[in-house]
Image (cartoon, rainbow, N blue to C red; front, top):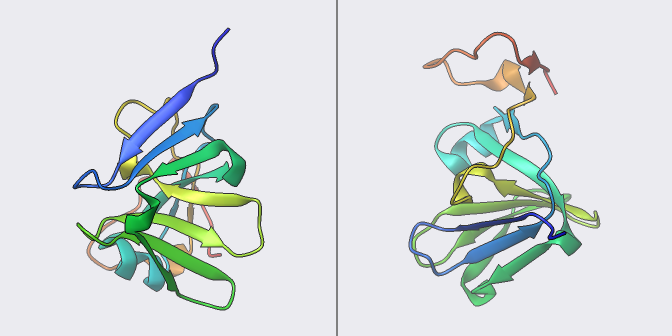
Amino acid sequence: MSETVHKGSCLCGAVTIEVAGDLSAPDACHCSLCRKQSGHYWASTDVLSTALTISGEDHVRWYQSSEKVRRGFCDSCGASLFWDPIHHDKIAIAMGLFDESTDTRLWSHIFVADKGDYYEIESGVLQKDQ
């Protein structure tokens, strides 16, 4: 029996990813840093770093946004790729990178107190202030 593999890429295709196994339900972060990084809120799924294969890693640039987190983006097209908590075994991957259906559904919105004033959060999904 073959294992599920989810494939994706940045806008220009310089960075491609493969994730082995099923994806966890994504969350949406509304904090000001994630909104500035992504242009809206940041929707991502957490995967074990060992399940992630990155091709074109020489095009990934990292921005140290805090003492605990770095954010990865493509140096060619500027696409937001990763949210990487330093010294953890998981990495968050932007949902927009995946080429095909992920068979997931958003499970929570976090940092909702910081959300932009130009949109509403749909009901029926867990909302947290942190």
